[in-house]
Image (tube, rainbow, N blue to C red; front, side, top):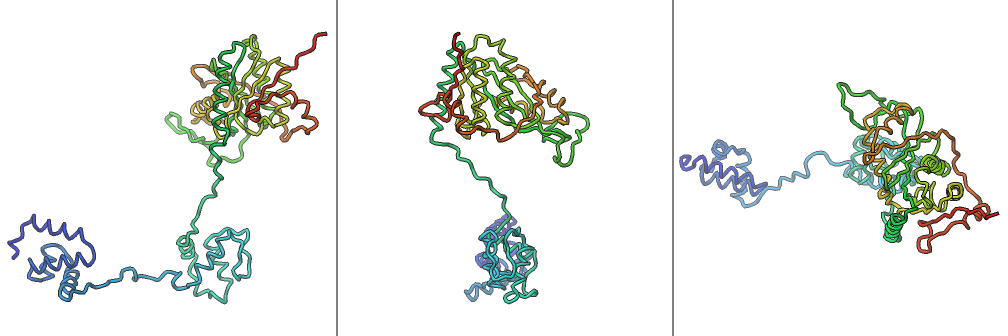
Length: 407
């Protein structure tokens, strides 16, 4: 009978058996053993490589017509939840309300991190239900928590609204404002924004630099020697970028002082300018309802003799502000450097370019206090100087300079 089977036929039969599982496979192997091996499980094992015990089981099933139920799922150790039916419910009562409920235990679970050890300790206190011998191990407790859906999860930040009802109208307003400034010869458009604070120290910043040996940095980014606050001003038409570093805080006073510093240096270049259009985002320190910011901007307009138009981008869309691209180039430029001193930061910033133009880099060594604001009564005189858009009053504000009356 062996001669009737060629090598190719054997491979075909073996491949067919591999495609089957359970009782169907046993039935197939048993039928092959009957047809080609005189019903011998040992011969089927020799020719086809199948287990003879499995083939014999298939022969028995083929003869009786009743497949065996091996009940693989019932094998092994029982789960802790099966041994202790109340366990899963008690864990759920402890964890589901975020540790506020004490299911008949003698201690509160409030302000307790929901670890496997903490749950095990809490359940152990309920001796009426659980004896120390009955409770599973802490490791098993963690597995029960995972199976019940209480896995380790990161604390999620609330997702910001990606779009407000005024978003489309704001983009249209920004586009019209830019077109208008491009057509006015005496109007200069700038884009302003602050960058994330820069830590001074031997810190790795996730970048790469070429060298025979890698640069050495601290193993933890803790305890910086100082923090620098970068503020950027981009003259959009000629791509001139100015970066002002502060050592204090990003406040309304710091922002306007940076603008004043920039104008004092650049006003000779723009002697013909009578209007300044400023693109900015919706940061809290430069919002149009920030009393100290509006007060300082009015003072800046009066001192410079400029009409200032504040053009706000829609909330959550500050990435469209032109100066944001400059920050991206700067981050790529110095990301492999060790920024361990003020001079290093200033030198790296000076060596970058934006559209082929090197930036102007300044340092403003002044201390600023947080939370400076005006009362409603004090702000009223400044609020009367503002010209707000009727359709977008929060995001379109014009400040006219105070014209001195002729004597």
